[in-house]
Length: 126
Image: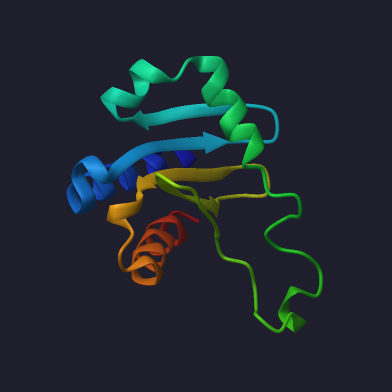
């Protein structure tokens, strides 16, 4: 099911931002599966360097924790990393799986609406 969702996200993002989409990855604590990588990036990144990048992006605390309802900001719905050349967005799918996408910084101009559109696709699958 996570593969279907990652595939739908990749299709949606390709239509919405075209070449602004860099990668779509399914990640677990000890492995990852590449759903999409832009051609120019597939030439630059090796399997090892991509694996290291996915590992570096792991969220240190779970997305949902006991008492999350009492957190002043509410439940964590996504994690956003902002780098010089990309936004990296991480969405929980299940307790063991998350979907990580990277987009060019020029593609993230209306980031909140963009993140929520992606969340709706992920939420429809659960």
